[in-house]
Length: 229
Image (cartoon, rainbow, N blue to C red):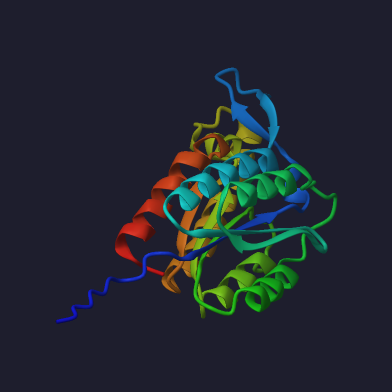
């Protein structure tokens, strides 16, 4: 007698997509009680994104998944097809060290097209970026919507805690009132854009950069546990 036992394939491709455009150059600011802004730690949003990428890659590889990398600005800066093993992790870390934030807006649609070409099968995509403050819908949202037709998308916007602090503060004069109103409008627009992605099935996070790594790892474990890919 021969018995065959089958189990669901739990291994998956995990792509880390990093925006290296001008929005990721900004330093992480913290709002102080003195109503002044100061640089906290001197790390850029891209620095925080790269640290999170390394942590996620380590966890995903330990979990048996394959990890790929796409870092982009106006063009593709770094690209690594999904793979496994210690040497693959070292290569990914080396490529992350070479990622540089650019002074111009990133070409999000080019990155989307490249990713769909490199990964035709369903995968988990972690996309770390930020949302430009514009009256028009940011291009990154259009790119994210295209990915949702094929992939599971975890879309992470790097929040600006100083803007949130201004929006919540009670204004004491006319100038602060206008600043508060502008901050509330910016925060509301971000939430509407992220809500649009959630309606289409994306997982979204709008986070203080310092909270990025644990939140992303928890979301990855949730996706893994629910076998969403």
